[in-house]
Length: 336
Image (cartoon, rainbow, N blue to C red; front, side, top):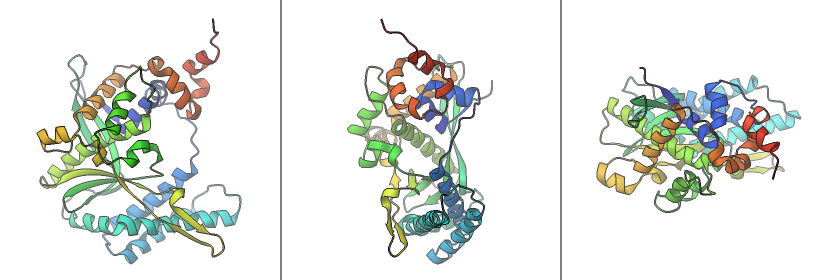
């Protein structure tokens, strides 16, 4: 029997609502998505990756290549703006974010990629694939499952091999943005999310921790191929559409933006597990990742155990809510 394959994104969908996962990944139903911010991030992602693939490492050359590619993509971008002024403003925002990225980590990451160029391995995406193979519980009818994730590029820092993903904002991380380690609030949030008797329901933050587990394990495999066993593996997210870090001077018609990446490895690492394995691992997260994958493979799509939280938190923005039998049944249910 072939090894089944799941994705980290799919598992987060399952955390939001098992029925949503069934609609999207089992039946292959397409929901309606209209996210202009994410579309613009995709343009900037492609432009930055083009610059990183060029081999350039100095600011001016990276900016020149990225700006050229961004101009090409923007010319074909058909987002409906209410005026030419708005279109010009949104392009200026992208230019400012590009500059903020280069200032924050761009040139350093380009240099790290250049140091890895001797390998024949592709290091720059977008959507660079990583995979993690996990053993399933004995009661499962499969022995192992492969879980896929993607990063936009991989770079080398002084002590670490780093996978980097561009995201619109860090808001979905919730508490993870404000904590620097696993112990305490993060561990409690993660454990409580899976407690059906708890009111804690944080699928985005929990999904980010599961994704970190997959990415870090995928980086370990890449590390072996690159003969970099002495390096640790880390996972970083870089926000490219955070309006809170964009300043507009309407008088001078200028836009400034700062980019502040976050390293999810610190909130993922369980120091107890690290002390035993000397690897960036977390036994609690890793074991729960396997549990969630097992539930998905077993076809456990009934949202009833956490329906109250799902109905409140997930249904309002669900693309499948109109035709969802669970939501419709809840709406027409008679009391008494």
